[in-house]
Image 1 (cartoon, helix red, strand yellow):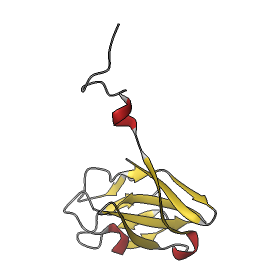
Image 2 (cartoon, rainbow, N blue to C red):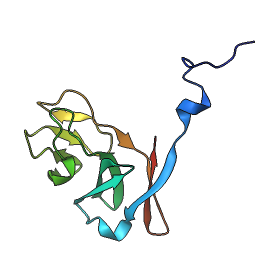
Image 3 (cartoon, rainbow, N blue to C red):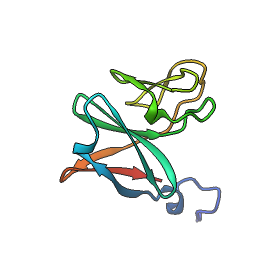
Amino acid sequence: MIKPDDNDFTSSRLSRSVRAALAMDSEVPEGGAMCVTANQKPFALFKVGGKVYCLDNTCTHLGGPLCQGRLQGTIIQCPWHGSRFDVTSGNVVGPPARKPVRAYPVAVEGGKIVVELP
């Protein structure tokens, strides 16, 4: 019989997540961004086409605050060095960043933006 151990990525201790209400849907402007913090970690919320997206608020290039960047459509541009990311996936769409930024599942429930965090 195989037992889960510390190296087993199917272990329930590694797959736990927490659902957190980070803001009210009405607080995030259409075509805009909002900076939020949960468990002392910064996140960026974006609203495009009425849908809300959540990314880590730290650019993977040199740590710029993505929530303070310029949002054009679904692309956020880091205010520090211009790296660009797709807010729907966190994927890099423009240098100098090379690594994607982490994206989180979002639901709007009773007017609250609820994000599934690790």
